[in-house]
Length: 459
Ligand code: ADP
Image 1 (cartoon, helix red, strand yellow):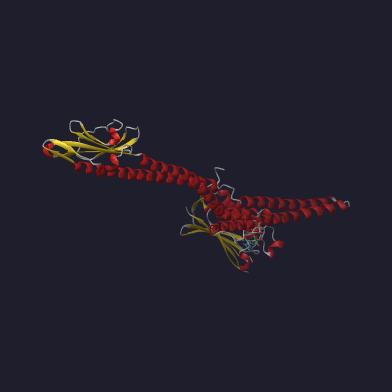
Image 2: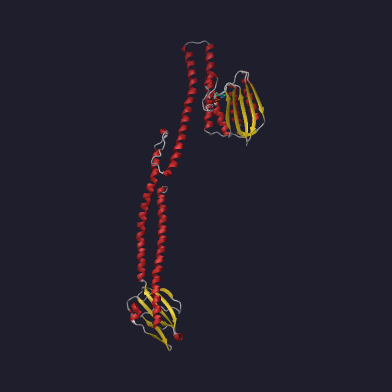
Protein backbone atom coordinates (compact mmCIF):
# COMPACT_ATOMS: atom_id res chain seq x y z
CA UNK A 1 0.00 0.00 0.00
CA UNK A 2 2.85 2.41 0.91
CA UNK A 3 4.26 1.91 -2.59
CA UNK A 4 1.00 2.87 -4.25
CA UNK A 5 1.19 6.16 -6.14
CA UNK A 6 -2.37 7.00 -5.13
CA UNK A 7 -1.65 6.40 -1.45
CA UNK A 8 1.47 8.57 -1.61
CA UNK A 9 -0.34 11.35 -3.45
CA UNK A 10 -3.18 11.38 -0.94
CA UNK A 11 -0.80 11.21 2.03
CA UNK A 12 1.36 14.03 0.68
CA UNK A 13 -1.60 16.20 -0.21
CA UNK A 14 -3.31 15.74 3.15
CA UNK A 15 -0.04 16.22 5.05
CA UNK A 16 0.79 19.48 3.27
CA UNK A 17 -2.82 20.65 3.33
CA UNK A 18 -3.21 20.03 7.09
CA UNK A 19 0.07 21.77 7.84
CA UNK A 20 -0.94 24.84 5.80
CA UNK A 21 -4.42 24.85 7.32
CA UNK A 22 -2.92 24.67 10.82
CA UNK A 23 -0.44 27.47 10.15
CA UNK A 24 -3.21 29.64 8.67
CA UNK A 25 -5.52 28.95 11.63
CA UNK A 26 -2.79 29.83 14.16
CA UNK A 27 -2.01 33.01 12.24
CA UNK A 28 -5.71 34.01 12.14
CA UNK A 29 -6.18 33.15 15.82
CA UNK A 30 -3.22 35.30 16.75
CA UNK A 31 -4.51 38.17 14.55
CA UNK A 32 -8.00 37.93 16.04
CA UNK A 33 -6.55 37.92 19.57
CA UNK A 34 -4.52 41.06 18.81
CA UNK A 35 -7.58 42.79 17.33
CA UNK A 36 -9.97 41.85 20.16
CA UNK A 37 -7.56 42.69 23.00
CA UNK A 38 -6.43 45.82 21.10
CA UNK A 39 -10.03 47.03 20.98
CA UNK A 40 -10.41 46.45 24.76
CA UNK A 41 -7.13 48.35 25.31
CA UNK A 42 -8.26 51.34 23.24
CA UNK A 43 -11.56 51.39 25.05
CA UNK A 44 -9.73 51.39 28.42
CA UNK A 45 -7.37 54.08 27.18
CA UNK A 46 -10.32 56.27 26.21
CA UNK A 47 -11.85 55.73 29.66
CA UNK A 48 -8.62 56.62 31.48
CA UNK A 49 -8.27 59.80 29.39
CA UNK A 50 -11.87 60.69 30.21
CA UNK A 51 -11.32 60.13 33.94
CA UNK A 52 -8.13 62.16 33.89
CA UNK A 53 -9.97 65.09 32.34
CA UNK A 54 -12.47 65.00 35.21
CA UNK A 55 -9.88 65.11 38.00
CA UNK A 56 -8.63 68.55 39.09
CA UNK A 57 -6.08 69.63 41.68
CA UNK A 58 -6.70 72.96 43.40
CA UNK A 59 -4.47 74.46 46.10
CA UNK A 60 -2.73 71.15 46.70
CA UNK A 61 -6.05 69.28 47.02
CA UNK A 62 -7.27 66.72 44.58
CA UNK A 63 -10.85 67.20 43.56
CA UNK A 64 -12.53 64.07 42.17
CA UNK A 65 -16.13 64.42 41.21
CA UNK A 66 -17.21 61.67 38.86
CA UNK A 67 -20.88 61.63 37.90
CA UNK A 68 -22.59 58.40 36.74
CA UNK A 69 -23.34 59.99 33.42
CA UNK A 70 -19.64 60.66 32.91
CA UNK A 71 -18.35 57.25 33.95
CA UNK A 72 -21.10 55.28 32.12
CA UNK A 73 -20.74 51.46 32.56
CA UNK A 74 -18.01 52.07 35.14
CA UNK A 75 -20.60 53.35 37.62
CA UNK A 76 -22.63 50.10 37.46
CA UNK A 77 -21.60 47.75 40.31
CA UNK A 78 -21.64 44.36 38.53
CA UNK A 79 -20.82 45.54 35.04
CA UNK A 80 -17.32 43.99 35.01
CA UNK A 81 -15.88 47.50 34.45
CA UNK A 82 -13.52 48.86 37.08
CA UNK A 83 -11.54 52.01 37.67
CA UNK A 84 -9.34 53.29 40.46
CA UNK A 85 -7.50 56.57 41.09
CA UNK A 86 -4.32 56.37 43.15
CA UNK A 87 -2.03 59.09 44.46
CA UNK A 88 1.74 58.91 43.90
CA UNK A 89 2.25 57.60 47.46
CA UNK A 90 -0.14 54.71 46.86
CA UNK A 91 -3.32 56.06 48.48
CA UNK A 92 -6.48 55.05 46.69
CA UNK A 93 -8.35 58.32 45.99
CA UNK A 94 -11.36 56.92 44.15
CA UNK A 95 -12.88 53.55 43.27
CA UNK A 96 -15.56 52.42 40.90
CA UNK A 97 -18.74 51.00 42.61
CA UNK A 98 -17.87 47.56 41.13
CA UNK A 99 -14.73 47.57 43.35
CA UNK A 100 -16.09 49.26 46.45
CA UNK A 101 -19.04 46.88 46.57
CA UNK A 102 -16.75 43.88 46.99
CA UNK A 103 -14.19 45.84 48.97
CA UNK A 104 -11.43 45.14 46.49
CA UNK A 105 -8.70 47.11 44.77
CA UNK A 106 -6.96 46.80 41.47
CA UNK A 107 -3.19 46.13 41.68
CA UNK A 108 -1.23 49.38 41.81
CA UNK A 109 1.45 49.48 39.12
CA UNK A 110 4.48 51.82 39.35
CA UNK A 111 4.11 55.41 38.14
CA UNK A 112 4.25 55.58 34.35
CA UNK A 113 3.22 58.49 32.17
CA UNK A 114 3.13 56.12 29.22
CA UNK A 115 0.01 53.89 29.09
CA UNK A 116 0.73 50.32 30.23
CA UNK A 117 -1.60 47.37 29.52
CA UNK A 118 -1.49 44.10 31.46
CA UNK A 119 -3.74 41.11 31.97
CA UNK A 120 -4.61 40.32 35.58
CA UNK A 121 -6.90 38.17 37.71
CA UNK A 122 -9.72 40.42 38.93
CA UNK A 123 -11.67 40.52 42.20
CA UNK A 124 -14.20 37.96 41.02
CA UNK A 125 -11.32 35.64 39.83
CA UNK A 126 -12.16 36.63 36.26
CA UNK A 127 -9.47 37.62 33.80
CA UNK A 128 -9.24 41.38 33.38
CA UNK A 129 -7.39 43.73 31.12
CA UNK A 130 -5.79 46.52 33.11
CA UNK A 131 -4.81 49.89 31.68
CA UNK A 132 -2.66 52.19 33.78
CA UNK A 133 -1.39 55.69 33.15
CA UNK A 134 -0.02 58.40 35.45
CA UNK A 135 -0.83 62.10 35.06
CA UNK A 136 0.76 65.23 36.47
CA UNK A 137 -1.83 67.69 37.78
CA UNK A 138 -1.17 71.32 38.82
CA UNK A 139 1.24 71.86 41.73
CA UNK A 140 3.22 68.78 40.53
CA UNK A 141 0.63 66.42 41.97
CA UNK A 142 0.93 62.98 40.38
CA UNK A 143 -1.93 60.55 40.20
CA UNK A 144 -2.31 57.18 38.48
CA UNK A 145 -5.57 56.04 36.94
CA UNK A 146 -6.30 52.37 36.32
CA UNK A 147 -9.24 51.19 34.29
CA UNK A 148 -10.03 47.56 33.85
CA UNK A 149 -12.48 45.42 31.92
CA UNK A 150 -13.35 41.76 31.91
CA UNK A 151 -11.80 39.81 29.00
CA UNK A 152 -14.52 37.20 29.17
CA UNK A 153 -16.27 38.37 26.03
CA UNK A 154 -13.00 38.58 24.14
CA UNK A 155 -12.01 35.09 25.23
CA UNK A 156 -15.47 33.78 24.35
CA UNK A 157 -15.01 35.10 20.85
CA UNK A 158 -11.55 33.51 20.58
CA UNK A 159 -12.87 30.22 21.97
CA UNK A 160 -15.67 30.27 19.42
CA UNK A 161 -13.14 30.79 16.65
CA UNK A 162 -10.93 27.94 17.97
CA UNK A 163 -13.90 25.57 18.27
CA UNK A 164 -15.03 26.40 14.76
CA UNK A 165 -11.54 25.63 13.44
CA UNK A 166 -11.47 22.33 15.35
CA UNK A 167 -14.78 21.32 13.78
CA UNK A 168 -13.96 22.61 10.30
CA UNK A 169 -10.46 21.07 10.13
CA UNK A 170 -11.51 17.37 10.26
CA UNK A 171 -14.45 18.05 7.93
CA UNK A 172 -12.21 19.82 5.39
CA UNK A 173 -9.60 17.08 5.93
CA UNK A 174 -12.09 14.34 5.11
CA UNK A 175 -13.65 16.22 2.21
CA UNK A 176 -10.27 17.01 0.63
CA UNK A 177 -9.13 13.40 1.25
CA UNK A 178 -12.20 12.17 -0.63
CA UNK A 179 -11.62 14.81 -3.32
CA UNK A 180 -7.99 13.84 -3.90
CA UNK A 181 -9.02 10.17 -3.88
CA UNK A 182 -11.48 10.86 -6.70
CA UNK A 183 -8.96 13.02 -8.58
CA UNK A 184 -6.19 10.40 -8.34
CA UNK A 185 -8.60 7.64 -9.37
CA UNK A 186 -9.61 9.65 -12.42
CA UNK A 187 -6.00 10.63 -13.24
CA UNK A 188 -4.73 7.07 -12.89
CA UNK A 189 -7.52 5.67 -15.03
CA UNK A 190 -5.59 6.18 -18.31
CA UNK A 191 -2.65 4.29 -16.78
CA UNK A 192 -4.92 1.40 -15.83
CA UNK A 193 -6.37 1.43 -19.33
CA UNK A 194 -2.86 1.33 -20.76
CA UNK A 195 -1.88 -1.43 -18.37
CA UNK A 196 -4.95 -3.46 -19.49
CA UNK A 197 -3.98 -2.96 -23.11
CA UNK A 198 -0.37 -4.06 -22.68
CA UNK A 199 -1.47 -6.95 -20.48
CA UNK A 200 -3.23 -8.43 -23.51
CA UNK A 201 0.03 -8.68 -25.49
CA UNK A 202 1.88 -11.92 -24.87
CA UNK A 203 4.51 -13.94 -26.77
CA UNK A 204 1.60 -15.51 -28.71
CA UNK A 205 0.30 -12.25 -30.19
CA UNK A 206 3.44 -10.17 -30.51
CA UNK A 207 2.07 -8.78 -33.78
CA UNK A 208 -0.54 -6.79 -31.84
CA UNK A 209 0.10 -3.22 -30.78
CA UNK A 210 -1.37 -0.96 -28.13
CA UNK A 211 -3.90 1.08 -30.07
CA UNK A 212 -3.65 4.80 -29.35
CA UNK A 213 -7.43 5.23 -29.32
CA UNK A 214 -8.51 6.56 -25.93
CA UNK A 215 -4.95 6.73 -24.59
CA UNK A 216 -4.36 9.94 -22.61
CA UNK A 217 -2.03 12.52 -24.14
CA UNK A 218 0.54 12.10 -21.32
CA UNK A 219 0.68 8.32 -21.75
CA UNK A 220 1.06 8.42 -25.55
CA UNK A 221 4.91 8.61 -25.56
CA UNK A 222 4.97 5.62 -23.19
CA UNK A 223 2.58 3.69 -25.44
CA UNK A 224 4.62 4.61 -28.52
CA UNK A 225 7.87 3.46 -26.89
CA UNK A 226 6.15 0.28 -25.77
CA UNK A 227 5.00 -0.39 -29.34
CA UNK A 228 8.51 0.23 -30.66
CA UNK A 229 9.89 -2.17 -28.08
CA UNK A 230 7.32 -4.82 -29.07
CA UNK A 231 8.25 -4.34 -32.74
CA UNK A 232 11.91 -4.92 -31.88
CA UNK A 233 10.99 -7.95 -29.79
CA UNK A 234 8.82 -9.32 -32.56
CA UNK A 235 11.61 -8.89 -35.11
CA UNK A 236 14.05 -10.56 -32.79
CA UNK A 237 11.59 -13.45 -32.22
CA UNK A 238 11.09 -13.77 -35.97
CA UNK A 239 14.84 -13.76 -36.61
CA UNK A 240 15.29 -16.36 -33.93
CA UNK A 241 12.55 -18.55 -35.45
CA UNK A 242 13.93 -18.12 -38.95
CA UNK A 243 17.42 -18.95 -37.75
CA UNK A 244 16.13 -22.08 -36.04
CA UNK A 245 14.25 -23.27 -39.12
CA UNK A 246 17.23 -22.47 -41.41
CA UNK A 247 19.59 -24.27 -39.05
CA UNK A 248 17.35 -27.33 -38.84
CA UNK A 249 17.02 -27.33 -42.61
CA UNK A 250 20.81 -27.16 -43.02
CA UNK A 251 21.27 -30.14 -40.71
CA UNK A 252 18.31 -32.12 -41.99
CA UNK A 253 19.73 -32.29 -45.53
CA UNK A 254 22.96 -34.16 -44.68
CA UNK A 255 21.08 -36.32 -42.17
CA UNK A 256 18.64 -37.40 -44.90
CA UNK A 257 21.51 -38.09 -47.27
CA UNK A 258 23.25 -40.24 -44.62
CA UNK A 259 19.96 -42.04 -43.94
CA UNK A 260 19.46 -42.80 -47.68
CA UNK A 261 23.06 -44.11 -47.95
CA UNK A 262 22.40 -46.38 -45.01
CA UNK A 263 19.08 -47.60 -46.51
CA UNK A 264 20.79 -48.37 -49.82
CA UNK A 265 23.62 -50.22 -48.05
CA UNK A 266 21.40 -52.44 -45.90
CA UNK A 267 19.01 -53.20 -48.83
CA UNK A 268 21.28 -56.02 -50.02
CA UNK A 269 24.75 -57.36 -49.50
CA UNK A 270 27.54 -55.09 -50.86
CA UNK A 271 31.17 -55.47 -51.67
CA UNK A 272 33.85 -54.18 -49.30
CA UNK A 273 34.76 -51.49 -51.84
CA UNK A 274 31.12 -50.31 -51.95
CA UNK A 275 30.95 -50.18 -48.14
CA UNK A 276 34.23 -48.23 -48.02
CA UNK A 277 33.02 -45.78 -50.69
CA UNK A 278 29.70 -45.19 -48.86
CA UNK A 279 31.38 -44.81 -45.46
CA UNK A 280 33.74 -42.22 -47.01
CA UNK A 281 30.74 -40.26 -48.31
CA UNK A 282 29.00 -40.55 -44.94
CA UNK A 283 32.22 -39.32 -43.29
CA UNK A 284 32.24 -36.27 -45.59
CA UNK A 285 28.58 -35.57 -44.75
CA UNK A 286 29.31 -35.81 -41.04
CA UNK A 287 32.25 -33.38 -41.46
CA UNK A 288 29.99 -30.94 -43.28
CA UNK A 289 27.33 -31.28 -40.58
CA UNK A 290 29.88 -30.80 -37.79
CA UNK A 291 31.21 -27.70 -39.57
CA UNK A 292 27.66 -26.30 -39.94
CA UNK A 293 26.84 -27.01 -36.28
CA UNK A 294 30.07 -25.27 -35.19
CA UNK A 295 29.23 -22.27 -37.33
CA UNK A 296 25.64 -22.12 -36.08
CA UNK A 297 26.91 -22.08 -32.50
CA UNK A 298 29.57 -19.54 -33.40
CA UNK A 299 27.19 -17.16 -35.14
CA UNK A 300 24.55 -17.30 -32.40
CA UNK A 301 27.20 -16.69 -29.75
CA UNK A 302 28.67 -13.77 -31.69
CA UNK A 303 25.30 -12.20 -32.45
CA UNK A 304 24.02 -12.56 -28.90
CA UNK A 305 27.06 -10.44 -27.88
CA UNK A 306 27.77 -12.66 -24.89
CA UNK A 307 31.37 -13.27 -25.92
CA UNK A 308 34.38 -11.32 -24.65
CA UNK A 309 37.15 -10.08 -26.92
CA UNK A 310 40.64 -10.87 -25.71
CA UNK A 311 42.30 -7.65 -26.80
CA UNK A 312 46.04 -7.40 -27.46
CA UNK A 313 48.40 -5.40 -29.68
CA UNK A 314 48.34 -6.99 -33.13
CA UNK A 315 50.23 -6.38 -36.34
CA UNK A 316 47.53 -6.75 -39.02
CA UNK A 317 50.12 -7.46 -41.70
CA UNK A 318 51.41 -10.35 -39.61
CA UNK A 319 47.85 -11.69 -39.15
CA UNK A 320 47.19 -11.52 -42.88
CA UNK A 321 50.49 -13.35 -43.48
CA UNK A 322 49.31 -16.19 -41.21
CA UNK A 323 45.94 -16.30 -43.00
CA UNK A 324 47.63 -16.50 -46.43
CA UNK A 325 49.78 -19.41 -45.23
CA UNK A 326 46.61 -21.27 -44.13
CA UNK A 327 45.24 -21.20 -47.68
CA UNK A 328 48.48 -21.62 -49.67
CA UNK A 329 47.79 -25.22 -50.62
CA UNK A 330 44.05 -24.89 -51.45
CA UNK A 331 44.83 -21.80 -53.56
CA UNK A 332 47.63 -23.50 -55.47
CA UNK A 333 45.36 -26.51 -56.11
CA UNK A 334 43.07 -24.16 -58.06
CA UNK A 335 46.02 -22.36 -59.62
CA UNK A 336 45.14 -19.16 -57.76
CA UNK A 337 47.89 -16.73 -56.86
CA UNK A 338 47.50 -15.03 -53.48
CA UNK A 339 49.40 -11.72 -53.06
CA UNK A 340 49.81 -9.82 -49.81
CA UNK A 341 51.00 -6.21 -49.81
CA UNK A 342 50.77 -3.04 -47.70
CA UNK A 343 52.17 -1.65 -44.48
CA UNK A 344 52.61 -2.89 -40.94
CA UNK A 345 49.87 -1.49 -38.71
CA UNK A 346 49.34 -2.32 -35.09
CA UNK A 347 45.83 -2.33 -33.69
CA UNK A 348 44.18 -3.59 -30.51
CA UNK A 349 42.20 -6.71 -31.33
CA UNK A 350 41.39 -10.32 -30.61
CA UNK A 351 43.93 -12.39 -32.59
CA UNK A 352 41.85 -15.54 -32.80
CA UNK A 353 38.65 -13.76 -33.88
CA UNK A 354 40.33 -11.52 -36.44
CA UNK A 355 42.17 -14.54 -37.90
CA UNK A 356 38.78 -16.26 -38.19
CA UNK A 357 37.17 -13.23 -39.90
CA UNK A 358 39.96 -12.67 -42.42
CA UNK A 359 40.29 -16.42 -43.03
CA UNK A 360 36.61 -16.49 -44.03
CA UNK A 361 37.14 -13.61 -46.47
CA UNK A 362 40.24 -15.18 -48.04
CA UNK A 363 38.55 -18.60 -48.13
CA UNK A 364 35.60 -17.06 -50.04
CA UNK A 365 37.94 -15.18 -52.37
CA UNK A 366 39.54 -18.52 -53.29
CA UNK A 367 36.29 -20.58 -53.29
CA UNK A 368 34.36 -18.20 -55.52
CA UNK A 369 37.33 -17.47 -57.83
CA UNK A 370 37.97 -18.83 -61.31
CA UNK A 371 40.61 -21.41 -62.10
CA UNK A 372 43.96 -19.61 -62.41
CA UNK A 373 42.61 -16.39 -60.87
CA UNK A 374 44.16 -14.04 -58.31
CA UNK A 375 43.53 -12.92 -54.76
CA UNK A 376 45.04 -9.58 -53.71
CA UNK A 377 45.22 -8.66 -50.04
CA UNK A 378 46.26 -5.17 -48.98
CA UNK A 379 46.76 -3.65 -45.53
CA UNK A 380 46.63 0.17 -45.49
CA UNK A 381 45.22 3.06 -43.51
CA UNK A 382 42.88 5.95 -44.09
CA UNK A 383 42.20 8.69 -41.53
CA UNK A 384 41.50 7.08 -38.20
CA UNK A 385 41.08 3.58 -39.62
CA UNK A 386 43.18 0.67 -40.74
CA UNK A 387 41.86 -0.67 -44.04
CA UNK A 388 42.23 -4.30 -45.15
CA UNK A 389 41.03 -5.23 -48.65
CA UNK A 390 40.58 -8.73 -50.03
CA UNK A 391 40.01 -8.68 -53.82
CA UNK A 392 39.40 -11.61 -56.11
CA UNK A 393 38.93 -12.27 -59.77
CA UNK A 394 35.82 -14.47 -59.36
CA UNK A 395 32.34 -14.22 -60.85
CA UNK A 396 31.35 -11.26 -58.65
CA UNK A 397 28.12 -10.61 -56.78
CA UNK A 398 25.10 -9.03 -58.54
CA UNK A 399 24.14 -5.62 -57.01
CA UNK A 400 20.73 -6.78 -55.69
CA UNK A 401 22.36 -9.72 -53.87
CA UNK A 402 25.06 -7.68 -52.13
CA UNK A 403 22.90 -6.55 -49.20
CA UNK A 404 21.84 -10.16 -48.52
CA UNK A 405 25.21 -11.90 -48.42
CA UNK A 406 25.73 -10.89 -44.76
CA UNK A 407 22.46 -12.56 -43.75
CA UNK A 408 22.59 -15.94 -42.04
CA UNK A 409 22.38 -18.94 -44.40
CA UNK A 410 22.16 -16.72 -47.46
CA UNK A 411 24.01 -18.11 -50.48
CA UNK A 412 23.96 -16.98 -54.12
CA UNK A 413 21.91 -19.43 -56.22
CA UNK A 414 24.94 -20.33 -58.36
CA UNK A 415 27.03 -21.12 -55.27
CA UNK A 416 24.42 -23.30 -53.58
CA UNK A 417 25.01 -26.47 -55.54
CA UNK A 418 28.54 -26.03 -56.76
CA UNK A 419 30.61 -24.65 -53.89
CA UNK A 420 30.84 -26.04 -50.36
CA UNK A 421 29.56 -23.64 -47.73
CA UNK A 422 26.87 -22.90 -45.19
CA UNK A 423 26.06 -19.23 -45.69
CA UNK A 424 27.31 -18.47 -42.18
CA UNK A 425 30.83 -17.22 -42.99
CA UNK A 426 30.02 -13.58 -43.74
CA UNK A 427 27.60 -13.12 -40.76
CA UNK A 428 30.48 -14.33 -38.54
CA UNK A 429 32.90 -11.90 -40.26
CA UNK A 430 30.47 -9.00 -39.81
CA UNK A 431 29.84 -9.78 -36.11
CA UNK A 432 33.59 -9.98 -35.38
CA UNK A 433 34.38 -6.73 -37.22
CA UNK A 434 31.48 -4.94 -35.46
CA UNK A 435 32.76 -6.23 -32.11
CA UNK A 436 36.03 -4.43 -32.97
CA UNK A 437 33.97 -1.25 -33.64
CA UNK A 438 34.76 -1.61 -37.34
CA UNK A 439 32.67 -2.06 -40.50
CA UNK A 440 32.78 -4.08 -43.69
CA UNK A 441 31.84 -3.03 -47.23
CA UNK A 442 31.66 -4.94 -50.48
CA UNK A 443 32.32 -3.77 -54.02
CA UNK A 444 31.82 -6.11 -56.90
CA UNK A 445 31.56 -6.29 -60.67
CA UNK A 446 29.81 -9.29 -62.14
CA UNK A 447 32.22 -11.32 -64.23
CA UNK A 448 35.29 -9.44 -62.96
CA UNK A 449 35.47 -10.07 -59.24
CA UNK A 450 34.69 -8.75 -55.75
CA UNK A 451 36.44 -6.60 -53.20
CA UNK A 452 35.70 -6.86 -49.48
CA UNK A 453 36.94 -3.82 -47.52
CA UNK A 454 37.30 -4.00 -43.73
CA UNK A 455 37.74 -0.80 -41.67
CA UNK A 456 38.98 -1.08 -38.09
CA UNK A 457 39.58 1.96 -35.85
CA UNK A 458 43.27 2.56 -35.15
CA UNK A 459 43.00 3.29 -31.43
P1 ADP B 1 29.49 -19.60 -47.60
O1 ADP B 1 30.74 -19.16 -48.27
O2 ADP B 1 29.69 -20.62 -46.56
O3 ADP B 1 28.40 -19.95 -48.55
P2 ADP B 1 29.35 -16.89 -46.68
O4 ADP B 1 28.50 -16.29 -45.66
O5 ADP B 1 30.81 -16.79 -46.51
O6 ADP B 1 28.88 -18.38 -46.81
O7 ADP B 1 28.98 -16.22 -48.05
C1 ADP B 1 27.61 -16.07 -48.41
C2 ADP B 1 27.46 -16.06 -49.89
O8 ADP B 1 28.03 -14.88 -50.47
C3 ADP B 1 28.20 -17.18 -50.54
O9 ADP B 1 27.41 -18.35 -50.61
C4 ADP B 1 28.46 -16.64 -51.93
O10 ADP B 1 27.33 -16.87 -52.77
C5 ADP B 1 28.59 -15.16 -51.72
N1 ADP B 1 30.04 -14.74 -51.66
C6 ADP B 1 30.78 -14.56 -50.59
N2 ADP B 1 32.03 -14.18 -50.92
C7 ADP B 1 32.06 -14.10 -52.25
C8 ADP B 1 33.06 -13.76 -53.21
N3 ADP B 1 34.30 -13.38 -52.84
N4 ADP B 1 32.73 -13.79 -54.52
C9 ADP B 1 31.49 -14.14 -54.90
N5 ADP B 1 30.49 -14.49 -54.06
C10 ADP B 1 30.78 -14.46 -52.75
